[in-house]
Each structure stands twice: as C-alpha cells, then as structure tokens.
Image (cartoon, rainbow, N blue to C red):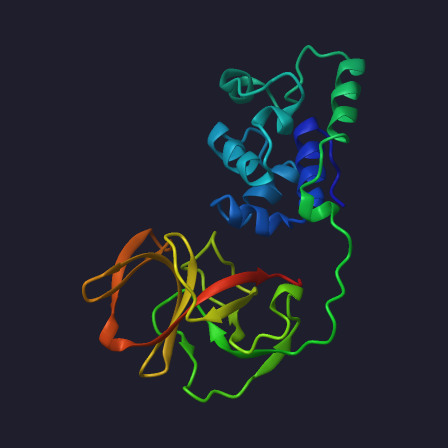
Length: 248
C-alpha cells in the first residue's frame, strides 16, 4: 500500500478500493493516461488539474470535493491553487471529521448485494476479440477455446457465448482482459455493446448507433471517437453484449 500523506491521496485510494477499481482500471475508465491515478496516489502528481479530478470523480460517483476534502465541493480555484495537502487552513479536528465522514459514503447496491453462487464454468468462450476491425475470428461452427462462469440470469440459455477482449479501441466502454458475454440476435438499442460476426469469420466489438439503409452504424472510441457503417452484405450475425466480467 502506498504512503498516503494528503487527504486527496487517502480519499482517492479509499474510494477506488470501495468501488473495486485498480489504479490502472480507474485511469482507463476516466479516459486518462494509464499512470494518471497512480501518479496522484503515490504523490508523483502533486497538483492534478480539475479536469483530471472531475473525470475520476464521475467514475467513482462522487464530487471533486469528496476527493480533495469535505467542504471544498467543486470550487475550481481551491483545487487548482492549493498545494499538495488541499486542506490549507483547516484544523486537525476538521480534517479528521471529514475523513471519518467518507467512511459513511454508501456503497453501490452491487457491492452490498448478497453473494451469488456461480456454479461451474459452462459458458463457452469462442474467441479473442479486440476493439479493432477484424481482430476476432469466430467461425460459423467455432469450437470453444475455453469456458467461463455463466451469470445466473442466463442459466439454461443456449444462445449465449463469450469472447476475450484484447484491444483498446472500445476503452473506456470495454477494456483489454475482460470476458465479454453476449446473446445472439437480441433487439438492439442505441448505446448497446455488440459483437458483429462477418461472413468471412472476422468479428468486432463495437457500440450500436443505429440501423441504416445498407447496414449498421457503430461507434468506437480509440484512437479517436468515430462512427462508421458495417454493411449488411458482410454480416453473418449480430449479438448484444450482456456483461463484461473482470476476474483480475
């Protein structure tokens, strides 16, 4: 555990742990450089910008004030001008009270839920998927390359499969190393994650935008956000992503 000298370091580390993030995953989810959160936690970045703190706070479902100390709220001037401590002029008692208050921040429902029995891994993993064009191969009769756990809601269904995500073009929506679970031929809405399998056995993970005259419009996020069309004549099937699991 790093040495946490300032309220920002302590609050960020505590909230990150409570939400189940690593320093790397939180940086990715916030759309920052891969070492951005680590640099703040270990004290290498002593004056992070408001933009960085705001992006991190949104992922953690808190305010910038919750990160820097109770009472600062979203005051940009104090965040930008205060030195490393972010608590200039506050008494030890006030700092202690604000840090204690952070312990009372309610956890998301998902972190307060009862344990779920996953059973044995019986969900087929059909291939490795990357967030780039044609970086996944799923044959029409592809044999599983492995097996993973099936969410309780999907037990008994045969139209479900999984792939490994290995690319970066869909960060922060999906991250490398996750197991992506999808259902075949489900209704789609704007914003849904999808796996498109092509007739040539290539496939891709993207975000559904809309149907168009000659195919499907999809979105990717890296190296820059863009929307493009995958033609109907190329598509074998489209599956809606149900969940992204991270067992690391």
